[in-house]
Amino acid sequence: MNFVVLNSSKKWGGNERWVTTAVNGLATRGHKIYLIVRQNARHWKKIHSSVNIVEAPYTNELSIKTKSIIKKILNNNIDIMLSTKRKDYIIAAQIKYSNEIKHIMRLGISRPILKRDFIQRYVLKHMVDGIIVNAEALKSELLKYDFMKQNFDSNKIKCIYNGYDITEKPKEEIPNKTYSFIVRSAGRLTSHKGYDMLIESLKNFTTDYCLEIAGEGPEYSALDDLINQYGLQNKCKLVGVRNNTINFFAGADLIVIPSRSEGIPNTLFEAWSAKKPVITTNVGGVPEVVDHKKDGIICEPNVDSIHSAINDFFQEKNIYKDLGKNGYQKLNRNFSMKLMIDELENYFDSFNDC
Image (cartoon, rainbow, N blue to C red; front, side, top):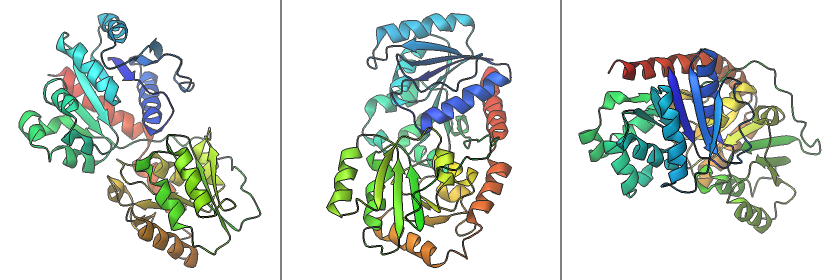
């Protein structure tokens, strides 16, 4: 099959990691891929050599030049147009309006914004043939909207869990040995990731710990101010972007994912890949994949619950010593890259039969 994949991102994150895994997996199976990316984006260095990377301006959601570039590529007998971010959804919808092309959206996080995002609602009702989500909880959430139930075939919304290819042993990023216990987290520094709650949850801990948060984003200054406000400069650190999150996690004693909203966080699988115990909030599809106190600890997305979960782990480390190992085994068993690509192929094939 021939695909054109749209991703307008400026920075690397979970969405871009999924795109990389998907296009590389499809390319290795002989599919023809055109990946349309933002001009001067520098985070597409791990794309399979057979994938055609095409730059476009993505100046706005009406970008005439971007649409022109994509329309020219459609002349190459494209079977599926896959959009992966909000701007991509809207550009792809405009192209579909004047072209006989199957348009599939991929949603990776909860979308309460649909309540007021009338443009995106129109796109979903009229300009989308299928939707890929990474958690059954997201599918259920979409189908709560009357406009979705009335205008969209629920069978066209497919849950495909993220897949990981574990081929290398993590190279541990050595922590600061002046601390007896290292807590780490990683992701875009945005409000929905909940790092403010994580910092606040640790403000009264007397344990000799260090929290390190890797990533960049619009909340950097606010988080830095919060660390200073609580006098945690020696215990909580914003350490910037890490090129390899699994290596970063491998040097920790505990991984905490304090998100306010998610589909299923990529960092959960990265923690399991590093065989590390993980505490994650009860959001999105997390309860679908984590067995509480067997391969992870689930808490509520608030300061008190995060604090209690971390304190419980501190006090009962011996009880939870196998969390990371159990998570690693589940990752290999249920969330492999092969399974993800198999499901993507089957889903895309269903549109060829239409």
